[in-house]
Length: 131
Image (tube, rainbow, N blue to C red):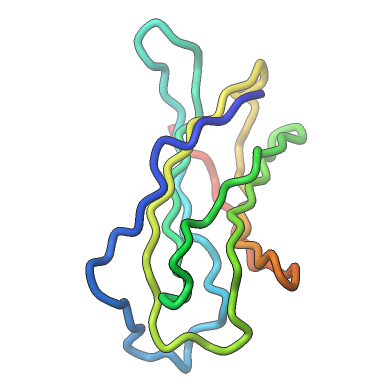
């Protein structure tokens, strides 16, 4: 198994503020899409793209833990340091990861978590892998 973080970038130029913050639960679960592709001369690869909403007061990039595969499910954690207060504004992060393994073609779903490293809590989503 191997994963490569291809991009981990803040994509907003000014603070992102939800229009109706009272309807948002923090931390906001990651928004994830995934699809298989085969790079030229390479092996079947799962491309994972995630959008993360993180308190704009935290200047650090989220980190990506090495994914774990269990049968047809890939589990992925995006780590950050979440403030216990509801943020006034967020930064929007785009994270792109390529994942390969001998059984990558068996993956049909990804469970991804935005995980607070202190204290350890998380919010997750389940995503079906597209072709």
